[in-house]
Image 1 (cartoon, rainbow, N blue to C red):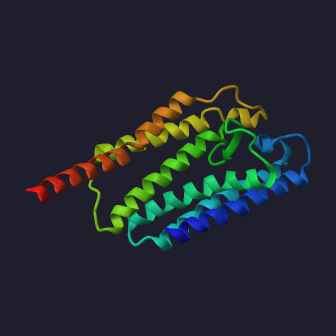
Image 2 (cartoon, helix red, strand yellow):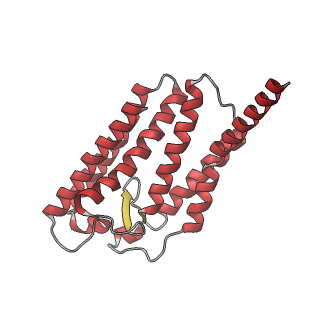
Image 3 (cartoon, rainbow, N blue to C red):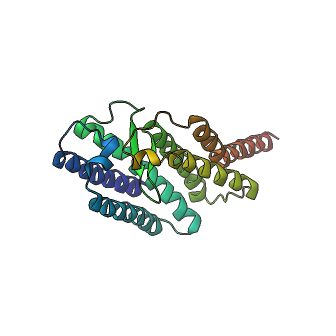
Length: 218
């Protein structure tokens, strides 16, 4: 866990440095939010390739860290969450951006631009870190999580809603405009559903502990 987290922090520093260089090369009042407007169109294709490479790097380190498919997925979630939060932390340290958690940003470009206030991806990343650490801890102790398929289907639906809240307004990025409002309702509902497996696991853990305590008392 330590090395995966350290990898995420270091990788975030590299990506933040790239953004700092882009801003320095295209000096002006435009914030990072509208970097699409200041990067020549031919370079956007390179940026898309860099983002794809970033995901490959996260998958690779998770594959190396995990011993089975479930563990690898959890390590990917952990690395992704640490990387994403670290990215904004490094930007804040380097150039004082974002000025606010409600500042809009272009999060991703595949398959269309993802747009949201910075707070939204930070919430998602925090949830990924909490969930991955909780499940990795139990997995390390040999406790297998057998949650019903319906629980995971709800989580998958929640993840889809979160992605929709990021991508539905992609046209604003294409038109070089900042969206007027974020779809917080759609986002909040998606996060709530995506957290169902973690909440179910916590509830089951408490039930197991209470049963164990009662048995021990007898």
